[in-house]
Image (cartoon, rainbow, N blue to C red; front, side, top):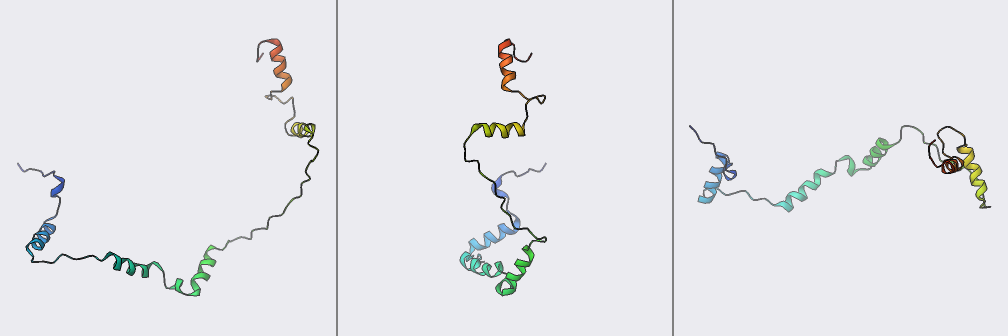
Length: 121
């Protein structure tokens, strides 16, 4: 039966092993990598030709322009109540949520429940 090699260090291909052996023997020179030169060369590809001219800005503005007119916001003047009267607030709250609607719990309902001694009945 054949054996299966499960060691992680022996995962090189035959070609990689041949290149390593010939480099160690001095028969083949390993390629060198100049990262800074490659980085500088890659900067040329990060900007397209159209972006180097004024047409790039025009194309970008046309591509990002809204398709519909956006109305300008208008301010609605709201008079402020400067009296500081809490009754005015209660009156406004009653207009928004009038008492007596089923499901609303009012102070009177809670007081009745406390007086009866059995909340909820």
